[in-house]
Image (tube, rainbow, N blue to C red; front, side, top):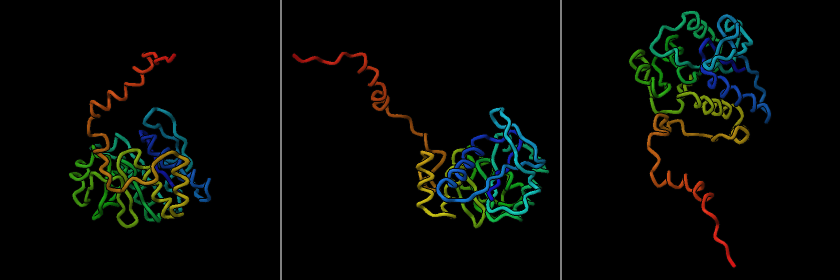
Length: 226
């Protein structure tokens, strides 16, 4: 069983991106059961304002193979609901692998699940995580970090990378390659792929001219021959 922990304001792509990886893995022979859980079992409002259906109350999860805690812009530098922190701490004791996506790492850290461990989070909030939780060794440029049975991923879409890695652990490279191909994503970005630098360099002027050239070519009549 895979459980994704959600709450009001949760980043929708954190949930949908990782969740879709496990669902599509079933297309190729896996047998994941996906649950979406909140503290009280009620639906939540996502980051884009849509209602997100919840299947379970978090305390009702007796055991799980993987629990992923999604992130939100509302987590860094703000008080986190104590009931959410306690529910995550409790379910971790009944979970094989515990993970966070993006700023969900702040919930894991608040629950004490990252004490003495290496971890990552969204690059924008990495320094804040390191300052707030001195017992956590933060790796700001990593796509995802594994420390024992605890996994943390960087910003938003890196939850897909993390989910692919978890599927590969369970079912091997061939199946996860099929999943990545189906989702039209990279099979594997290296875990230390410098998440904050993916788009840091400006596009060279020559490349911008090349990008505009198709429009110019459509305006220029093609030469004719006799």
